[in-house]
Length: 216
Ligand code: AMP
Image (cartoon, rainbow, N blue to C red; front, side, top):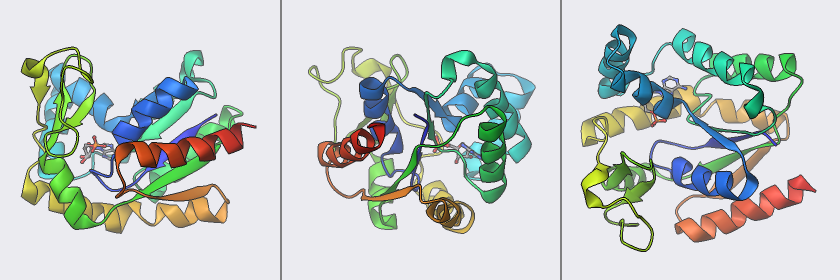
């Protein structure tokens, strides 16, 4: 199965994707995480990427398409992909379509999490990511504790682009550049819209029902 988890920044895509990965044995491809990996290597490309991300703008399609090409060249990923944060515009959507066809694969569905702007802002302002295990928490809605997280508080960080003015820019860019993609997938009958305001477990319950029904 190959999936896309879709929604505005802060919709909870990463959190839900982590749950799907565990149950359905998929590989999560978060272009944001891949870009942050490049930044952490402190390469010339990484430094350029950091400037763009911290402004809340999009990295070039060329950079993203190169990252995704590498994903398809790895056999481990064959029919086991869940994309989080990709594709983000129509050009990337067409590139993904091309790569899937070229590699004789297809998309199982696109899960779209609907969340309004005010909720997104609140969620992102509370977001914390563990630098050791990469799990995502929220200091208001889903705090890290001894039951759900083994690494310890000292590994929790906030992202440099999770500032209010950058979040608002990212949300506006999402509406203009990313939202139009939904029509592309709706026309292909691949789109499943989910209310992303509910709590984490209720959302996941709905997602797993959809995936089990499609998995046969
Ligand atoms: P994310 O972790 O998905 O919220 O992504 C963080 C930032 O990385 C975004 O605000 C963009 O600057 C950049 N980024 C991630 N994925 C993409 C993509 N598919 N296309 C362009 N820029 C991206």
